Length: 323
Ligand code: MEV
Image 1: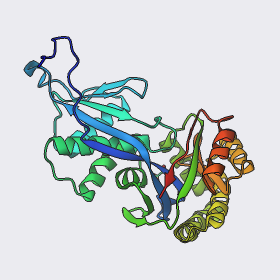
Image 2: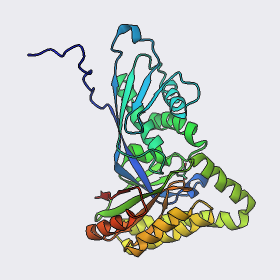
Image 3: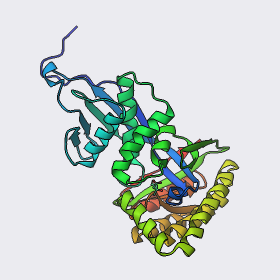
Image 4: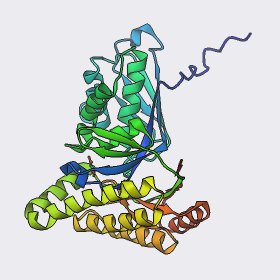
């Protein structure tokens, strides 16, 4: 048996915390006002592993967080103002931990800040990894409380949908609370997600909608309620594999999101390209202002065709199929 040489890298610890990413099929923004939303956990997500201090002298060093696939992101828990460091501190403090001496490695399979819930996926993976490492029991209420503390750093007053879905995976109807209703599919759901533009701040988009609602309450309160109604029609359509209806509701939802002021020219262009390529419906997904669109495909060949068309305007295209 050979012993590792002094210069060999430390063995990679097994992942302790996993999370999904998310895409909202219907209901973003209105969900902040207590309306339901329909969300899908995408298996491409994050995994976090934890290494103890390599040397006892480092056991009081601040907790380090490394995310190589996010432009080699590297922060530590004592950093004063980096948002990821603030979120890490919020998680450690909500779990009653110092994190001293630990190094957390995160493998992220999604890009950050494009509307796929990267900050929520990070919060879930970190919380699960730290809780497992320290043998802290983690029921859903505790996970929700800890992740909400981190999500407030990034998003101000989020509904909680992103981290709930990053934790649950699958297809869910969500109500702020959180109340999560897992939904089963009678046949596969074929989606195409296109990253149409750099993402905008969710915090700013949510406050922009709030300001517009306050300026135009008579017009926009009914729109928010209509989004809630179309979510429930969408849930019924999804459960009966009525993809034509679900697609139409996605198109309507995109129009209503435009009315809330969160679409942009690149998002609209990607939505129209997806529809022209045969999507049954397409809309922006997430906070808007940039980021992603989601399109519904009839079957795998159509999914491939829509993805090819979107590649002309999107930096990255994902084709998740949920069963
Ligand atoms: C962001 O993924 C979804 C929003 O509705 C914000 C939230 O629910 O916290 C825009």
